[in-house]
Amino acid sequence: FLFAPLSFLVGAQGGFFNAIMPLGVVLSGFFYPVALLPNWFEWLARLLPTAWAMEALIWSINGKEDLGRVALNWLPAVGLLVLLAAVEVALFLRAERRARLSGGLTE
Picture 1 (cartoon, rainbow, N blue to C red):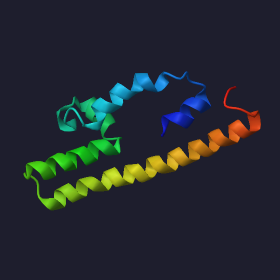
Picture 2: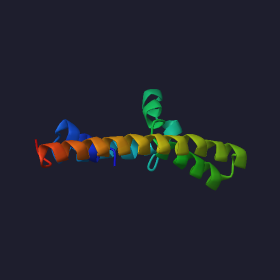
Picture 3: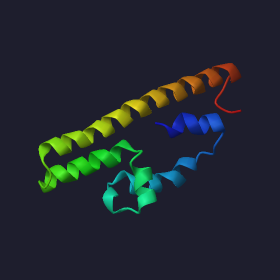
Picture 4: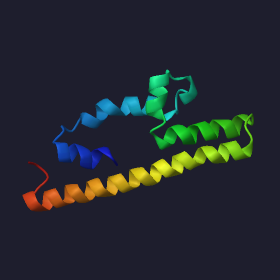
């Protein structure tokens, strides 16, 4: 949801998101554990709530971590989700305001 209003506001082309999506999949931890990524890549991954959630899910399946540590891993995931939701709402409101003022979805 973040890229829809953002690409409209900056005037990006329609295929813009298709170029970014593979990077998001790698950083999310769905296909490759975040802890095994290079340090600078892991830092980027930690900005995504899915990286924290997938790590907690993997820990709960493996059973190697205690429940408290698994639960603590959900805190950054939920916090980042709330933060991203607030940013998305602000961007959608700004995009809607621009569309109303300009009379359309194109510049």
